[in-house]
Length: 436
Image (cartoon, rainbow, N blue to C red; front, side, top):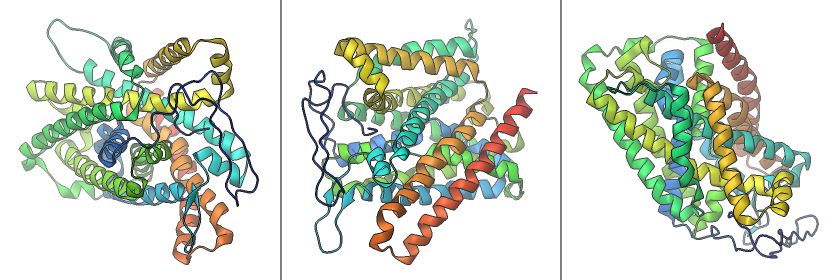
């Protein structure tokens, strides 16, 4: 099950399908797990919004100006188009959790992305689980990558540490924060991350405005297909929250306000990211780095932006790890380890293993923007576009969909398939050119 559970799950808690589910199921949790799910319906709307924004911020935002440098005006417009589409697919995905229509009260009959997929086509559930694991490891690796590259690029007297060693240090620093168990507690880290990110963004924007005389809006007016695909991939990576959106919705105390929280999250991040991307490009143009902060000259401003960005990025670790652990617990390897380890041992070992794996991945992958582009084309298109629309069609087509929604769903399916193929080609080609 891909739905977020607490580190120790429920005790003998069953689930019985409601009429219309097709068949009745009784699902009982592992007897070794002895605590109720402390995340169910305990998070206020503002905390859920902060968690969503924090997950959406991630680390991809520092590559956005580079995406504009490669994709031009079309790439910048993609930062507006992608969030609009992703807001729609997130909404229909949550809608698939419920049954009931116009004249009857809606009832929640599914509790996870996997259950939605299984209801349409059983093998799709296993495919989603694999994509989820890759997606979360992808995000955690990118967090380490951007933090280590920023710290390695910071010139401090008497300190000469390579990016690889910074990756190891970052892994050690974030490890203690991974023992936070609930979304309510993580929300305070999300608040810290959001505040730190806003400070970093404002500092970069102030620097951009300080150099406004060098701005040339005509420099945006170019077309490069490969650059455009790279920009769309990066935008998809930095806006995809569908691996965790059901978890956020279930954690909310007032689920009727989910659409509001989703709209606030996407609207605010869309405005911030688009402005940041365009201004960052105008300041540095063709010289824009994969991590735009590296373009700022050494000095106090560079130091402040680096530290605040690293704090923001590292504060996002616990949220993603919480989501990843929830999947591992429900897979065979998680059940195998849970049966042989004490709850405390599993709790500790699983988190240490995640840190070690993502740290090693960050050490082996030097190019941040290309990594986010590849992750966007492989994972984000599937989780955020293809599956939500395809599963919505599978569940709702025979119930009758409005023409506009039918067209919107098919658009998402076709766009995801075409974008994924072209995106993978573009990202792999860029990686090969960088390597050789």
